[in-house]
Image (cartoon, rainbow, N blue to C red):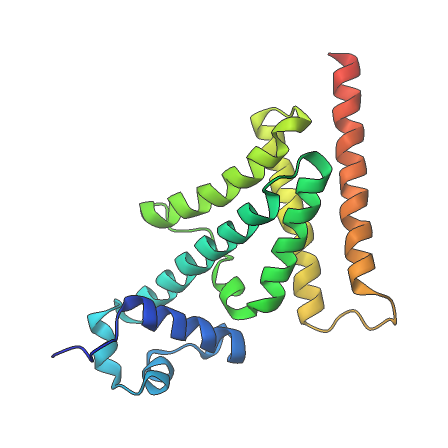
Length: 195
């Protein structure tokens, strides 16, 4: 079967990302993507390996896009300012791309070297930002988990409409990040005193 002119893997993935963001990740099907592209479903098999392949490509696309967003946010900043910028970028990405963000949440298959590498690049951006705090590698990885949990938890609750009180959500988020950083700085200061 001849592929439709102008149709390529990235066009298929971007279309799936648009669907995920507008309708939800669970609405991404080969039929829905094909319909949006104006092609028959079998045409997509020239570009992705079924629905599983499409979802894998969608996750990889999202991880790479998130990584670039975090990297741009951290440029020219250090310590607390860099962490705050990354946390804001993470939340913004989750808000702007809810379906694509959801696609990124699962740990990549251990045998998928491309997806593993993309995930490691995101973690390495965070580890680089945390270097000035003087943490050991495992400590820094725990902090990365903490930061991701804060951003994800807040963004998930926010997207579900869970914050019903008439309080500024941006202020709540800033306060939460500040509290985390105060704790992190206290731990780092205590370590330097005892070292």
